[in-house]
Image 1 (cartoon, rainbow, N blue to C red):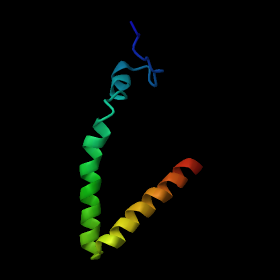
Image 2 (cartoon, rainbow, N blue to C red):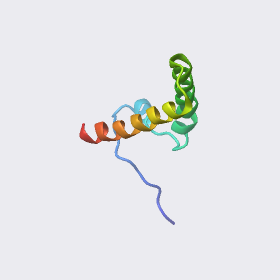
Image 3 (tube, rainbow, N blue to C red):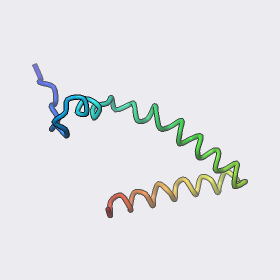
Length: 71
């Protein structure tokens, strides 16, 4: 029988350590609706067309990738 993967503890406090473990789907379930709303709200406030909004989102993802890698 395969043993479950045990991660390295980040905290000595068991409560804080328990808060560091979430199911992989939780960030998507939580953040996709928030990000979608914020993009929609920004597009409405700026009066952008869909092409410009898509370009801004893709540019932001591209820029974030390089900033995250650089940091």
